[in-house]
Amino acid sequence: MGSCADIHDAEPCGEHVIQVADERTLIATARGSLRLDNGTVLHDVVVVPGITRTLISVAALFKDGMHVSFSGHKCEVFGRLLFSGVVRGGIYELQGGTSRSAAASALVAQAPKYSKNDLRHWHQRLAHLNYNSILELENSGKVKGLKIVGPRVLNDKCEACALSKVTARSAPKKATRPQLSKDEVCHADLAGSMQRSIHGNHYFLALKWIGFTHISFLRNKSDAAAAFEDYLVIVNRRSDNQPHSIKVLRSDNGGEFEGTAFQSVCSAAGIEREYSEPHAHYQNGVVERANRTISETARTL
Image 1 (cartoon, rainbow, N blue to C red):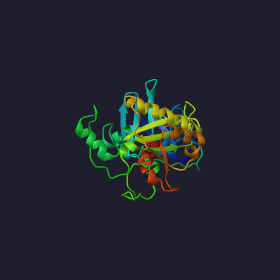
Image 2: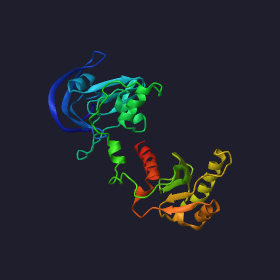
Image 3: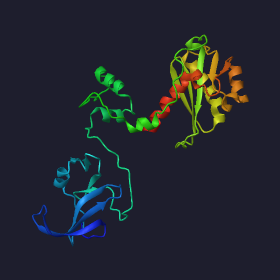
Image 4: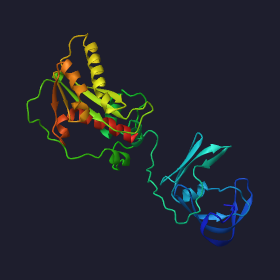
């Protein structure tokens, strides 16, 4: 540091001698704490009058139990993830300036030390897929470049998954009524409203039939009828233009499914309507689970 302006709890330190990389000797006159914009606090920071940049000693970080990684055009400091930097003009410049507010507070995420190919990294790269599935993918050899380095078991929990995948009580394991054939029932559910996409959509309609999930993005709920009509055209085309086998469309009691337009599409196609009870999402759990998977993936990313 070149001045005491950003230093908290500054106090004189006598003539503390510092030797820098070009073998010059500098004299520090004060010592204190420095708070960065991201909330990180550096202790035992010394002030050297006249220098124009804030310098951080890698040796001091090592002594404090930290680990520094230099790769390509960036550097990162681990132990707790304190900060990271990028190369500008041949110097690693840290992201985040200093804060002069002594009362400022921040939540600093505790980052475990991991390489770019360990299980945690692949968990994040593969849209927060569960650990067992990642290990199965590695063993199958179906994903090029998927080679996990380090432990195969992680005891720590993923914060993003914990916040994004909260669920209610589990649904009953068995159905309480006879089931129709899989190719006779199409399950429908509409999700939204959500933040507007770049194409102006606020909703998506999920349609699940014989194990395949089809997603249509909608600007308005009222577009659901047209989207379902288009879906029936796709189904017929994939069946070599033979009439589809859908006999029942199961959905909740949302207004988009009870409107005249949607009812007309179903009547014209000879499809019977079936509704789940209010607040009983498990009655249409086939597509509700698909919607949950899609929404969780989007949130974690």
